[in-house]
Length: 206
Image 1: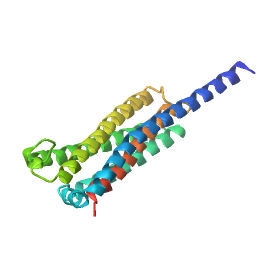
Image 2: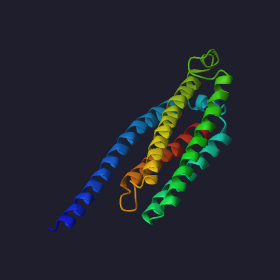
Image 3: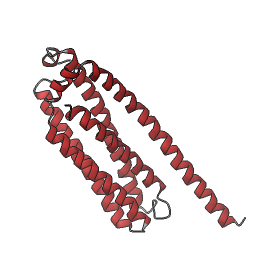
Image 4: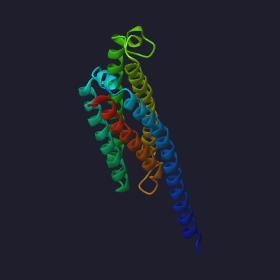
């Protein structure tokens, strides 16, 4: 085998290993949130009326708007990878930056939503919340833990995408070497999918 062929084969093997490693990592994330979803399902079954009542305290409009923001960010992330594959580096950078803007927009909306709840005294350990039923206390406990953990994943994802954007600007990520950007995109898509489950569970309870 020629040296060039051997090198190309090695790069291909490394790329496949990177993809496999990313999928394994995403699986652990699914296990983490999957466990939380099971806990949520159990408590919701036990306190259906209280969960329904507590959900009325949430702003469905903001939740819907945030869902649209994250879905759009998934699109821009996918377009950034497609652009780079077509050797359109500048366009890829623009789409990566757009994804960061959408992520920041989501966090700002979530900040105002949480601030409104804190302003009304609805937060873990508050006197207002402790006066409510056990089911409502459980609902808001799960709400803050699960949406807070999701928000942390958004921040981490934004950090990763920012790093990828810098690497793309420096031409360390190119049309021939885009696996890292592809992996960042998979992570971002997972974060978006998790929100698609969180949104109806907390905002659209019927």
